[in-house]
Length: 170
Image 1 (cartoon, rainbow, N blue to C red):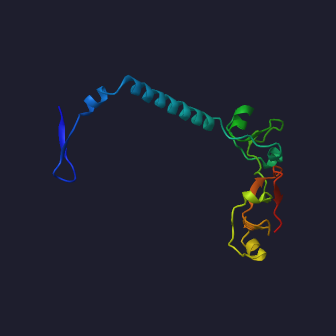
Image 2: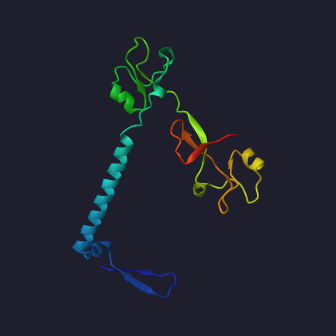
Image 3: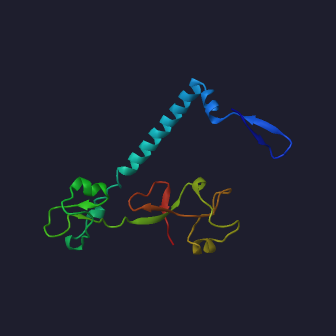
C-alpha cells in the first residue's frame, strides 16, 4: 500500500512507502548499530545520574569548626555520620544536646589575578587606563603586548590559590 502526497510545487507527485514497509527494509546491521547507539547512550546517562546521586563534596575540617551552641541542624534525628557527610554536612557527636549533623561554615573565597597572560579574559577596551580598569573591579597589568591588560579576576577557595595566580590588591 503506497500513499501519494503533493509537493509544494503542486505539479509533482511522489510515492512514499508506509512506515511498516520501510522498517522491514532496514538491514540487520543497521538495527544492530541502532541498538549499540541506544546502549551507549543509556550507559552514559546512567554514569551521569550516578555521579549526581553520589552527593555533595564533604566540607573541609575548617568549615566544621563551629562552636557547638552555634550549630544549625542539617540532618534528621538518628542520621549516621556517613549519611550526614554525604549530604554535605558536618558530623560531631561529642557534645550532647546540640545538633550532631550540622551546617558547615561557608567556604572562604578570594579574588586572584591570573599570572599567565594567555588565560586572561578581557574586561576593558584598548587604551583603558589602570584607574578605570580597577574601578570596574578588574585586574590591570600593562604587559605583555598582544593580550588584554585589563582582565577579569578569578574567584578561588581560600588556601587553594594556584601558583599561576596572585591575590588581588584593590
